[in-house]
Length: 331
Image (cartoon, rainbow, N blue to C red; front, top):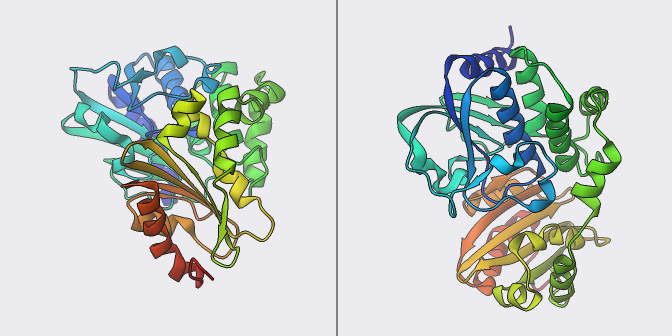
């Protein structure tokens, strides 16, 4: 029996052996994090288990079509006094990505860590980490099968959403034959792919357009035109009457420019806190860059949080990126 299969069995056993769970994903959850967390919730319901599903911060409203979205608690607005003996963390590249939700863990809590980031540091009691998986949702599909969960349209929708979003609409290099096979099976349960793609990949808010207009004015080519960067300040959000989620996807405008190897967005979430997102083509492993700055992710898509101003965050990123790229900022 290979190690991966044994760990899937351990994960399924974890679901069966405990009765009340805390379910969480990472700070600033995306489609895979949200779909996987709610997928776990649906699995627990089938098993007759109790749960609380929580995140530090809000979940983007564009995912409100997913079942049990209304059960998601924002720890900042809905604090909890309870602590939990059994915890399931999905799509968290490392322990810090759970944020303040860690304060809800009972002493000696058992933690199931389901993730696909190569930078994952195995922070769980049970670590089901598969870097070769396209999405955490792909791993969750295996856990559901191992646990004897009956697939239905709701569970299929959650897992499909995770697969769709983390493969960029099945366009990224992590789109494997197995991903497409799983997606095809999920469609058989009634998932409407056009509707999911419209909600997750196509539809944008007007506030996003206003933030984009301001951000594009900061677009800069550097490092011999191999790096493109963009920045959004707290003031930009205020003037656009926008939320942080309205800045989602801006980094792709940088990375998609012809000849650019690395795209970087610097988003000032609050004064003195800059969220850095990086996207790469082939020459640089941005997960290594992010990890040096306290973040993580994938070779071609990673991020981190940097304390300081946008200018200070840029310098910190350039200091790490320049030796990896072999080109200085002003060349």
